[in-house]
Image (tube, rainbow, N blue to C red; front, side, top):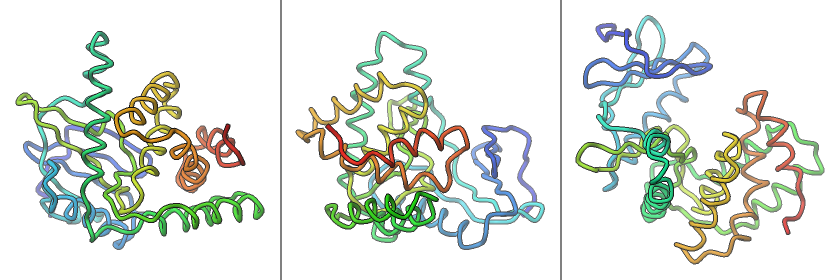
Length: 252
C-alpha cells in the first residue's frame, strides 16, 4: 500500500531508509532486498514479539512504490545512547542498566529464529579471509558451546528505548538469532570498538563478567569468530579493523 507518508526520516542507511508516520515506523528497503530477506526480518520481529520482552509490534509487510517495506509500531521514548550523552554523570548507572537488560534478554528463547551458529558459518565462508584462517575459525566455531537463547546480533545503546514510564523496549531485530549468549556479548563488545569507544567496551565487558560471574576468556574466545562473521556486510572503513580481530589466533 502507498498511503504511508514518507516525510519524516528517522535514519538513512546504505540500502534502506526508515521513516516515521504518526504511530508507525516504515522501513523502506532498496531493490536489492529479496522477498526471503524481507520476510525473514519481519519474522524475526514477530518471533521476538511472542516473548515477554517489550518490542515494537509488527504491523505489516508491504510494498511502497515498488519497494519492500516493513511496518511496525512507533515507540515513544529516548534511546539509551542519547541518555548516556546527555547525562554523563549517570554513565555508569546507564551502562549497568544496559548490561542488566542484555542479561535478562538472554534468558528467553524464540524457536522461530534462525540458528546463530549456522548464520555465522555461512558468513565466515563468505568473509573473503584466506583458507587457512577460515579453516581455523570454522573449527573454533564448531567447538563452541551450543545454545538456543535469544541473541540480538546488534545490541547497542541506540537500540534500547526508555519510555517516560521508564519501560524498556528493545528495537531493531533484523540480526536476531537463537544461539550462545556469549557470542552476543562479544558482538556488543566489538560494536563499542567499532564506534571508537574502547574505554566503554572494556567497562562493558568487565561489568558483564562481574554481573554474570563469567570468565572474560570465554567472551574473548568468540571475538575472532564474531569479527569474521561481520566481514561480508561490513562497511569499507570497518574491514581492516575486523580483519585484525579475525586473524588473531590466541588471546592472552
